[in-house]
Length: 439
Image (cartoon, rainbow, N blue to C red; front, side, top):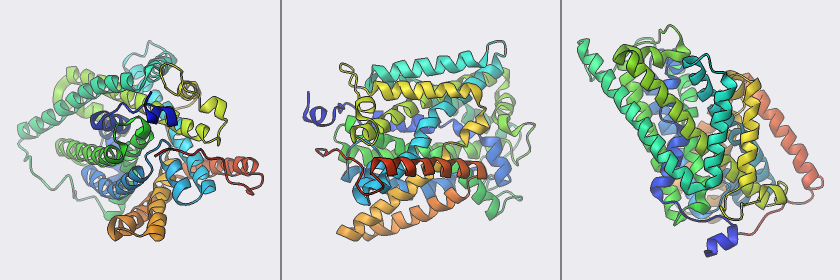
């Protein structure tokens, strides 16, 4: 067993490619098509502009995540960074808020995948698809990070092929209709305003939530001080480039924001550009994308719970358990799978409202952590102060643009975290327990 395995329990086996693939799988590049109609309605037909604005905004936060990952190369993501840079109690509350996002996101992913399949095969009960998703992803994640990474690679290859075909068929359709492949209309349509594009960017930013998930794999990555920061930026840049290009081609072949059903607009467009056969292939791509994303989301959630359990913030004997042979946080993986069964009683819109509050709370505090380190230690002004300040402002703006249900649920969850923290620290008189790491 290596020194890292002895000190932390997790084994460093992933390279840059594996980490980036996990981040991209978490982001699910095909999500830009799954939500295309909704973003188009919000922006007035300027979907690529919304994703471009969201990409620029997220890059500031990605730089902050990279700096913190290089400084603290341990599992836990935002939770670990805030406890080390600001305060252990604040770190706990950020971890608690992020847990809402990480814990329920796999459930949402599995629910959407089951909905796609149920729409195509209405004779098969939706619960059967959901349970199938949960069992397959749970088994792959328990078997180990390398097995899950190989599965993700194969699934990402298929997803990328579907994206490539959709992109090429869209451009072919534009040419066949006598249109131009170079146009500013998809970026600046007549009906769009700064307000509508900003609202669309707030929605489009949800598609970038995967870039921070790669930090949960820090202790399972070779040379994490270099690999993780690179992986964070590459995940955000590659994912953002795919979002913008695909949105541009799709908006080019279908200008404006009028659809028979905005929630399934991509199916409408897929059949237009490739007929019923490609419509079926596109559906398969969406299902595969949800499966790959579910693997990454479940892995990320289990690693966050493992970090909090190892610190003693959550019951250590349970949450810090690693399978003795596979070296995976089997209990956390299984718990996420069990929580996924809650989706049997929920619809997509209700379950989605759970996940956004924690993400933007974490983004904000990671930027504030970089600023806190700068104020104590100084360093580069641009990446230590200016970039994180811009990132924090943008993240707060995105947070305040969430709908009322998401904000209410998020605040209730945070309130429960404050109560638990008060019990854990005997009325805030003691710091939450923390484990010392070899970094």
